[in-house]
Length: 628
Image (cartoon, rainbow, N blue to C red; front, side, top):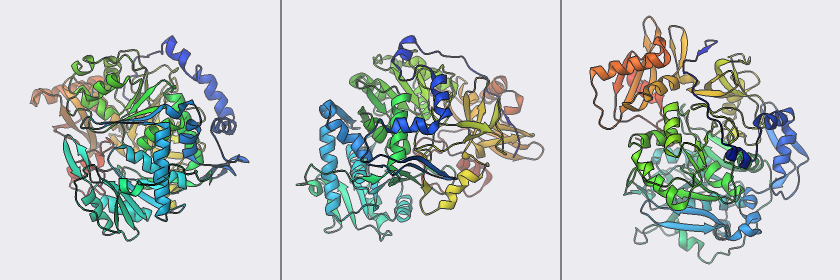
């Protein structure tokens, strides 16, 4: 691997937080807070953990036997006690916990007391089925409240939930059930997608036919007139819960007890079953939600993810509920039935915190600024971005159309990390396109292939010390876990390349395997894509490297045009000239192909390896997570 990664993106302007934003924030001086946390990380995490309720205290904050970590040794807890019980015992009992908005316009509202009762009923029904601590439950549901209820009910009993996004095919679901050796599947008759009812149960039927560990399937029937269930093997969700008590004590669990296994989205090959535990994951998601989003009791918090992905686990379900938040959960796409849907929801429910993805922002950009301008977005005060680096053009658009004064928390983290690791806090000055600085307690760095720190420049993103919410292993594949720690000596290697600027700000540039080597220069695909998208005719772009006889590799770009734009030779030339102006001659794509769609995971990440495999006539590998 080359020692140095070229960084071509021009540093953009600085946005300083308003005095009011800093005054409201939990942390008002990032540098002081960060330095104190890094001087003694164990004391920092010990203090955070003490903000939560435990059945019994820990005797050791961290046991670190490289690369295996255990946190809060001797402590016992249950994450659902902090999500539910402690709120129900307080004034928050009748506070709204979850607002659900269906694609068809339905609305369901759960107070903390009602959510607590429903979770307890589900937990009692699971117990009646003979489910025991450590058993795995596969949850294959659309974005409906039962998804949250089932997750929390499993956690309450020490069962391990494995949530699988409901857009997956039967073979993809089957492989995840088999790997987890799940005893129970929970699904629904159908979900909605752009007004069409998508049958889910036939997918489960096909998958479990080859999964002998599955004993029963629970079905949420959105259509009570739907098909019959197989006696003895399948149960109707409402009938299953009928008559169950609304009281169920949470099981005291060792802090290192597994909470869930979640299969990564597969941009790098075969999906991995990432294992997270009750104690450390609880601490990490609790404090990042609180500090990053400046979460207060009066907020209405809207995260657009699906609980089928880690963002949904950490920042729809666990993090917000640990903080006693009001969580808004909306089924459906951002542009159906109109491109104003999310803006309408924000106005209707007075949303104050809005956490979305660069992919969704670029989709909404395509429709122009009229849609957000038709709605009152004045209740918004904190914005967030997750999933991939946000190009400055999308950042600036998102910032402008939401009022021009709301800070954007551009968060970097992974399924494997459990919670946000590099991110602004509301008090931190922002640079569009940069995730800014590490979260308190996180020792992140940019290094060369030998692990030497790069003061300023491009290299590999690493974490140098363990953190509470880190994955504990890869299910059935501990060697794969070790590979994260053995790639660069002494570090957790994220697999992302990153540039660190003179202010210590992190600029993530994509996956290490998404780097193109042109004439000895290593160029991050994210920078070239960002330059293409900054052209007025382009809404989205993906870039790959192709073999080249003299340069080693050449850059090829795939571009989606904005509505009303036409492909012409002149436009292709303009795009190349634009990239040269933005980044320099070395980064200009030799080829640009206009396309109508790009291969993406259902969480919105562009699968460049699929584009590359197709371009080179190769096998694309695992594409179970592909949206189309």
